[in-house]
Length: 109
Image (cartoon, rainbow, N blue to C red; front, side, top):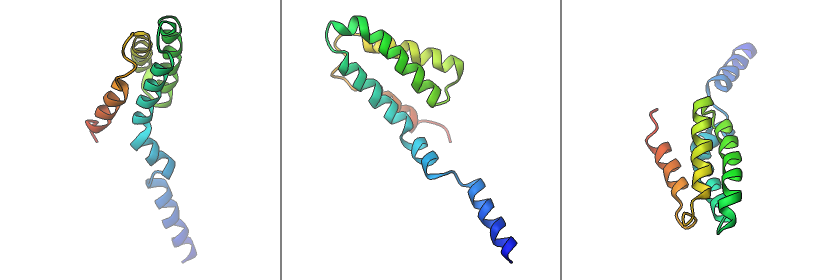
């Protein structure tokens, strides 16, 4: 009987994702969008033209690694984030958060 309970516990742990995995699956992309928009606000003004692409590329690469986007996804997110953080006038639009939320909403199961 004791072995059966242990086996049931192991089966539950193997098939059910952890709380951290479920939270990351739900909020990971949305948090990534918020971080990109926050960096865009921090690179406000003329300094953003010089520092924005560098910090944007670094943040895009790090987020793509954390979200397991693969090599092509890393390159795309790196380039898009660098351009987005360098664009003047994009600080007041939470475009990255909206895009990531829509991507999460329309993600196939």
